[in-house]
Image (cartoon, rainbow, N blue to C red; front, side, top):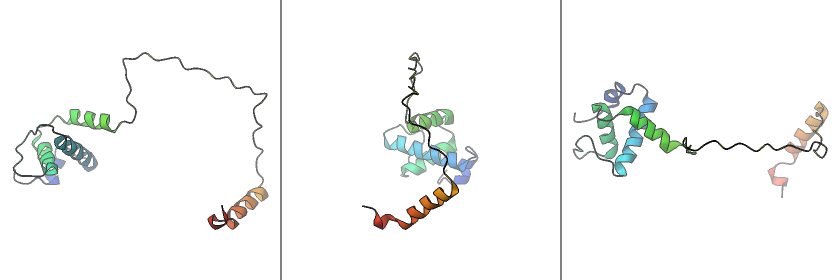
Length: 123
């Protein structure tokens, strides 16, 4: 396969968005030093990753799992036991009163005040 087109890869990964995510993730892995599964043939990293996807030399499930793991902000550790959550009881005697509902006239006045006092009049 001299050049990879999206059509070659779409047969393996039918969703174009998934294809983009997987190819970009694989390209980053290759740039970070992951071993290649196809010959480079003087191609750029993005083309090599597409060629790997088209040739099905990668396990797509492992690649997806790796992608999800890299995109996670919070990594959960399933081995650690759950800690009981502390329950905070509020003292309702000192709690501020809930604001009363605003009438239409009050709301209109507040909106007009915001409009009249634009960002130029602040500070």
